[in-house]
Length: 122
Length: 167
Image (cartoon, rainbow over the protein chains, first blue to last red):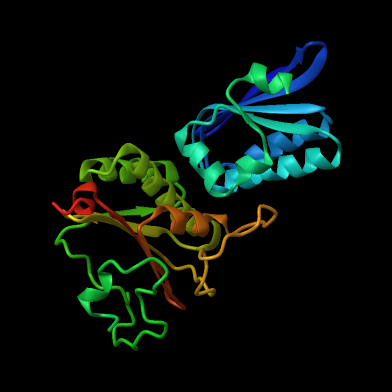
C-alpha cells in the first residue's frame, strides 16, 4: 500500500511497514499544515485510523509548519487510536512544530521519537 | 485613553493594555492607537496563510529577532490570521512595522471575539478549539486585543534583542 496525496502546501504519504514482525503504518507529512488544509489532512488520517492499525507513526521531519488546527487533527487521531487500542507516535518534529507540541503539552500526551526506527521499536 | 499613544507601550504581562470599555469614537474605527511609523507594510489576505507566514518571518528576521523568536512570531501571526479564515466572512488585513525597540504585527478582520479573556487560559488538550490564541499569548511579549461588532484588531508585540539589553 502506498499513495501520495498533495494538498496545496501539504504532502501526505502512507506506507505499511513491519518492525520485528509487527506491522505498523507510517504516515509522512511534509510541507505546511494549517487551517486551510486541515480538513483534507483529517480525512487522510481518518482513513488510516479506520484501518485499525496497532501502531500509527507520523513522521513530521518534512513538516515546516503546523498550526493549532493541524495539531487538533493529530490529537483527534490520538484519541481515536486510543479508543480502539492502537498507539500513535510522532517522529522528528522540526523546531516550529516541536514548539507548538511543547506549548500545548501535546508532547506529553503523544510520544515523540527521534527516528521512525525508535518509534517502531516502541 | 484608548486614543492615547501611550497605551501602545509595553505593560507587564497579564495587565490589560486596552480599556475594558473604550470610549465611543465618532469614527467608530480602530480603538488602538495608530502605528508609530509612517509607513507600516500592509497586506490583505483571504486564505493565503503561507504567504502571510513568509512575510512575517522575513520582517521578524530583518528587525533582528533571533530565528527561534522569529518562528514564534510567525506562529502567532499565523494563528491570528487563521481565525480570520475560520470565523470571519471577509478578508483580513495585516500591518507590520518595527523600530529600535520592538516589532509589531497588527491583524484586523470583521470577526468578533466575545470572550475578553480569549487566549488567557490554557485549554485542555480535549478542547476542540482555543489553542490558537493561547499559543499567541504564550509566545508574544505583549498581545493587545480589541473587538466589537465592527470587527477585531489584534496587535502582537515582540521586543527586539537590542531593546532587551538596553542598548
